Length: 345
Image 1 (cartoon, helix red, strand yellow):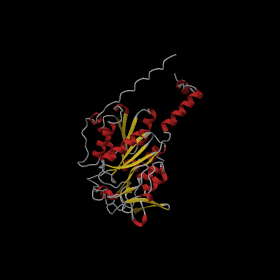
Image 2 (spheres, rainbow, N blue to C red):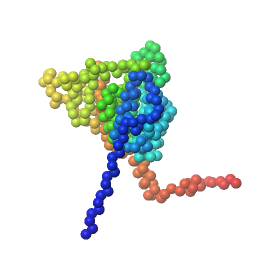
Image 3 (cartoon, rainbow, N blue to C red):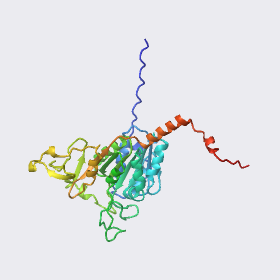
Image 4 (cartoon, rainbow, N blue to C red):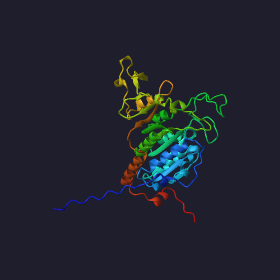
């Protein structure tokens, strides 16, 4: 009787540190910029993923956040304004084994690049998109962006903006993104957990990061991150757990018909059992949560949606395999000589 084959030993885990992913370029953002915190988080997460740096590609468009490829010691591509998702899509399709990350901003990713962002998300390309939202154009010195608050006074709207702002999470949901989350630049542990989950997600990931521009739009998220109020203004989303918040965890979210509302636990006979339980697989609930804004509601942070669906690169690979099975291996020379061909001598 033939003895069973001895299984091959598992490949040893690769060990990296944050320094392995730091480039030799001087990091040049304004002192106090929230981008430093995001960069630090990404470097730390990359060091935990057991992936060598030559397997990463960081892609960006134009804006302060788009300096990311220079500051991370991986392959990178600094593209033109708004086109990072399109370039990243091409990279991922050409080599699905690469870990492709996109760094973009509310202007780059939602204005000139809004169409590219939307289609990359709906196609479920296996890229990880970090959208830095500071509600302003920082690199060009303070014009309003697609996410600027209505009435915001700035260099391009001295009497206040008259445009309704875009809701990035709602846009991602409408685009059928399979992983959608939100975090804040100064919430380091939370941001690290969210970036790690985005990295582990099999498919396209969209992460909105509230990021402070202390020069051109300072404290734009003060009503969310101020230490004195943030416990009452943040709702941390955890799959399978009731939506409870507040300094003493005495407030919660419940459904009232087709609307959400805040209630106080212990008042009017209501208990924690009346609170909605978060479900990352319910896009309808995710959309309702995306509409919650102060002062009526706390701001949800965490994962809104996480679903495993076939990626674009998986579907394209299946098509290629099926076509080769039906038609055989392609012959480039034969293709070039099809139809009417003239030979010039």
